Structure formats: structure tokens, C-alpha cells
Length: 289
Image (cartoon, rainbow, N blue to C red):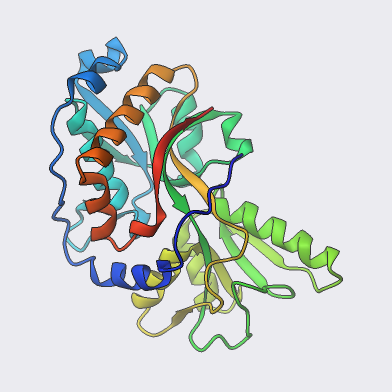
């Protein structure tokens, strides 16, 4: 696994801006068909004319359903722009995060996308095209009554969502606590982000491990029940995030990588990330296998 920490500390302000940017799904992309990128597509994908993606659609601001039940978020817009560059019709289907990798490796979907951390354990199952950097944070009850922070959660209980990158982050942090002679972190795994956050609201967990931007946005939508934990992004927990594809389908991965590079070159990529206040987690496209 290769970590890339070249994002700026303006993320805190940018993520706050993201909260205000969620008013509507209007996309700023101005992508257009690119013949060279399209030529890289596998024959079967080009023939069916559709690019399918699995997303949980509960991961604001990356991919979620708005008040009109429309698919919105930075992942949704990047995916649609990639499909446009490749001359394909985008088709996003909802799937729980933990089921995305098995669905890709099993051939149910062309790609999976939800700011997935590119981890060694995942690279054994699927390959990725990097498109962002993922940073972590915690959601706590209003006023942070137990005093947990992103920088030090030793001795506290944390709820995480099954299969997500925060599981690995907080398991590693728990080991660090023990090694330092501090109280261990109690980790509870939940099947979905909703139940994970509810555990914090009801006091069954002191914090929920999510992406840093999600912590800010979840607090905004909690009717005063939640706060983002203090301490900035979790130290040492930034990872490359990628669009997953089947290992045997490297040609598709190359086409997606080429399409992303077109979007970077024409400014569409940066505009989409900026619209959602996430320009400082953008990353140069690259294949990880």
C-alpha cells in the first residue's frame, strides 16, 4: 500500500464549505467524448454501451441521495463524467459498502466507487484507479462529553462500519494505545453508517469513525445531537482512495485512468472536487494492482 500525504491542511475549511455546497445536484462537468480513452475499453463494455457502478449512496458528500432521492455527490459526478468521456451511459446502483468488492470481483458491476481506501488487503481482491485521498475523523455526541479526540481516542469506544477503511485505522490506533501503555480502544462494528451513527446518538458508543468530511456533515444534519471530534484529521491515517475494478479487467482500469486524466487536463476534475469543497483531497490518477 502506498500512502500519499500531499493534501493541504485547508481541508478543515474546505469540508465546512462542503456543507454549504450540498444544496443541489447540478454538475459543473464539461466532459466530452475522448476517442483515445474510449479505444482502451474492453470490447464487451463498449458493445453494451453502459458503465455500471456500485455505490452505497449513504456517504455524504461523496455519494448519497438528496431530498429529491436523486443520486448526488463528488463520486456520482466524477463517475458520470468518466462515462461521458468514454462514450458510455452511466448506471449507478445502490449496494452496501461491504458488498462492493465481492460484487466487483464477481463481475456484477464494472466498477465500485465510494472513496475506497487502497489497502493491501483489498488489492488482493481487486485493483484500483486512484482518484482521491481519504482522511479520517470521528463523530461524537454534542459537546463531546467523554473528551475523545481525533488525535487521541485511547480508552474510548468507537463505532465503525463493516468493511470500511476506518475499521483498519482504529484497529491500528487501538494497538498503538496498548503499546504505549494506555487504555485500549473498544471497537464495535456495524453493518451500515446509519446504525453506526445512531450508536453514538444513543450512547452505545462514544464516537463513530468516518471520513473527516463526513464527520462535519453528519454533525450538520444531526439537529444538534452530534459534533465532529476535535483534533484535525486523524494523524497518520491518510490513504490513497480509488475506483475499484476486477483484476482480470485491467483494460477497463486503463480506460478509466485515461478518462480521469482527460478530466484533469480539461479542468472538469478540479471543478467537481471544488464544488463539494474537497479540492484538497484530489489526487493524480494512477492504477494500483
